[in-house]
Length: 112
Length: 117
Image (cartoon, rainbow over all chains, first blue to last red; front, side, top):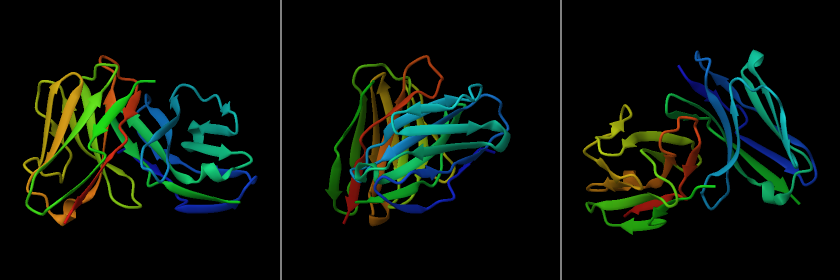
């Protein structure tokens, strides 16, 4: 069975703090993709990153970084020096066999 | 990146009426489109997979007679909520995958918020 768990329902930080959003997934397949999406209050999903199961290299994009560890089935997302504009719900998702499995989302509140 | 557009963005209707939501891939062809439903403060739940030229595949628990999906062309899929009731009020999101690719490169529409009075 495929499953994505985001244990953190809501996180509040003060601007400029670093914050890590956790994502743990379950799958028996060896080929899959992992994603992070941002959903601001307006509702649209904003694509942040896609990772395939064979690429465990961590990635950094500006203030965003991702840590993929197959050994622990985790794909965590870190925002460095958070900003108010980062406030949103963040979803981690697993994709294989033409289906997306979304986590329950983590609401991030960044206070000025 | 590719663009997926949904219309309408929001709709309010009376109970018992039917509502059609369109999902268009604007600059690419999509043999497969997906429809999701999102309740407030919850995750996206896959409702159905829409395949061009064939019947949609519905997820368990989704009433296919209630949520009619038509994927008549490579750039358009429609979701019709028939005889809508207040419990159908939700945020509906579609996504599309570039034809002939199975890499999870999905593009999401901006969503359609349905309120049934």
